[in-house]
Length: 169
Image (cartoon, rainbow, N blue to C red; front, side):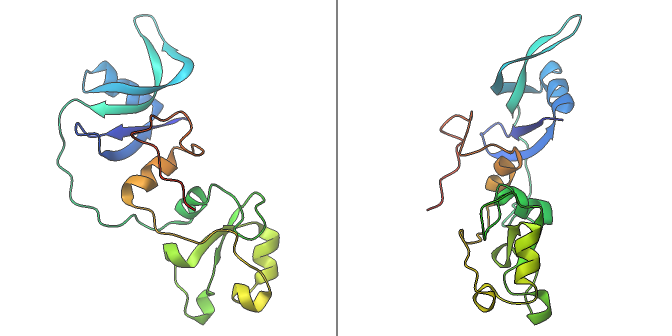
């Protein structure tokens, strides 16, 4: 099912919701479609809407300040776009740069997406000890970046430039 980014009235990312929830918010006039999937529409007896990719709430919603994005295995895979940090192939697992057995924790800066083969080859060692190098360095996404990354888009694809993520060098 498609995920839709929900923006606050001031264009701050709030969360992602299912396509069904996004359509309900738009039909109840609680949100407006800011960006839609090109060529896709939701049609019913009395409804004909573009499939929303980004919606904006009409009224401002106060949310508690979120200083950090919560770490999760899924979040690491999404952050690294399901690409292995060691070889660039499709990643299905999460690898700890400093293994947990050596004091490494479940943090954004200590975990990277990895393919099963490289994760097994690295085993209980650091990348230097295993003779492997990271193609990309792990980073901690902001809560807003984590929401946009959760949409699964590549390099700001189909998003307006005011919402596009900065490219990491």
